Amino acid sequence: MIRHQVLTTEKVPFSYRVAGLGSRFLAWLVDLFVIVGLDFMGAMVGSVLIVGRPGLGSALFLVWNFVVLWGYFLFFEWLWHGQTPGKALLGIRVIQWRGTEMNFFQSAVRNLLRVVDSLPVPVPLGPGLLGFVVAACNRENRRLGDLAADTLVVHVELPRDAEALQHRSRPRSGRRARVRAWRCTTQLRPRTTAPRESLRPAARLDARGGGSIPNRETAATSSPLSLS
Image 1 (cartoon, rainbow, N blue to C red):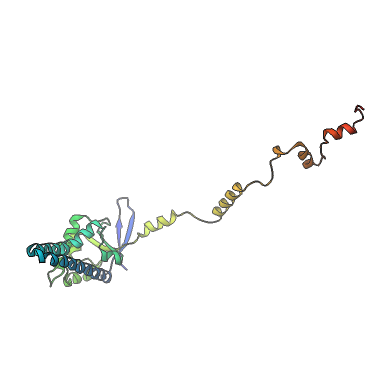
Image 2 (cartoon, helix red, strand yellow):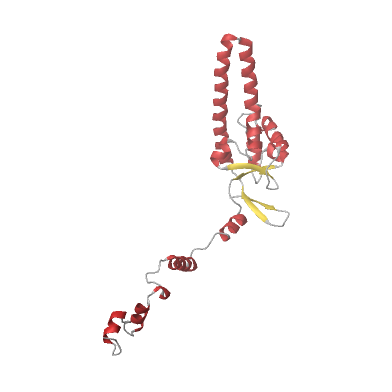
C-alpha cells in the first residue's frame, strides 16, 4: 500500500492512499461500457433522424460521438470532484499533487494526453499500453497525463489525521451520560405527595402526631361554660 503525504499551509500533514493499476483498470472498463451505451443511444436517435433527413441525422451522430469521446472524462472529472461513474464505483478520484481538487486546465491536459497514453492505438479509449508502462515504472502509478497535469489518482477516504480529529470530536457515552439521564428523569418525575402548604390544619396536626382539631359542635357540648 502506497501513501502520498501532503503538507498543508498550516504545516498539517495529510496522507492519501494511492490507487493501484488494478482499480484504475476496472474503473476504465466501467467507463468504457457507459461510453458505449451513450454512443448506442446517439446511434438510435441518429438512425431515426436519418429516415426523414439523412444529412441532419448523420451530423448529429458525429457531433454526439465526438462530445462523448472527448468530453466524458473531461467534464466528469472537472465537475464531479475528480470522479467518473467508473471511478465513483471503484472508490477512487483524481486530485492535484498538492492534495486539492484539480481545475479545468488540469483535467483538459490530463485527458488530451489520453491519445499519447493509448499508443500504439492512438484513440482516446485505446488499451493504453504506453500509459500502463509509464504508470508501472513510477512509484505512484502516474501515467503521462498525470505527470503533465500534475495530478494523482487516490482512493476516496478520510486522511488519517482528519479521521483521528473526527474520532476525538465524537461525544463520549459512559457513566456521566447515564448519571445525567438519571437526573433528568428524576427531575421530570411527578410528585406523589401533596406539598405541606396545601394540607389543612387538621391534616398537619395528624402528620405531626398531635391529634385532630375538634369541630365547633363537639367543643360546645363538652365545654363547662356553655349556656343551657
